[in-house]
Image: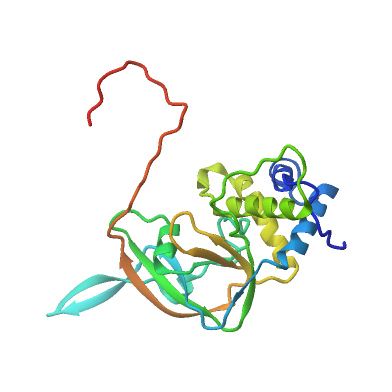
Length: 259
């Protein structure tokens, strides 16, 4: 199928998302195929090149134990997970933003703090953090465009260039939005299908902005494309929560609120 250069609507991602969530994920209709074709064509101008030797980080909540001895007293001391534990197991991967259940990918972040934030640890938890680097230059699709933008809306179809920007902003928001594991596989379907398509056409992975940390997330399709250099153990010293209020709150009985 020749790659179509243009999206047929500024809202094409929404239509694609609805189709793969609720109608058909594996046997795609013509409109889904056309959307993926346009994504492929426009992804060529959104390539993120990761240079050889660039440090990345991967975190796992938890640790191993190692027996120590001091003054003839034996005790167990927490140590980082072993190297093999710091990569996902082939064939037993959980559902993720980039991968379906059973097909693992390697999730990393651009700094330690973001890597730790992405595994959502609790206060006082011990987190094993590995440092990894690519052995060669890698090409990833940058899906971080417009991750913090407001939703687009047009009464009439804009130019092809504006349509493309609107679609990629929607893609960026979808990759970056926090998703509860309780919502099930359908919530991940749009990003999983896109990632599978990027893998099919030869990219090494995807890049998207973290909503839980200050850095970016990088997910790789090949588990062996990064070399692991060290694994360290970090205690979580603080967890920050910021809340807001939605407009549809209601009052049962008015009273004077404490400051």
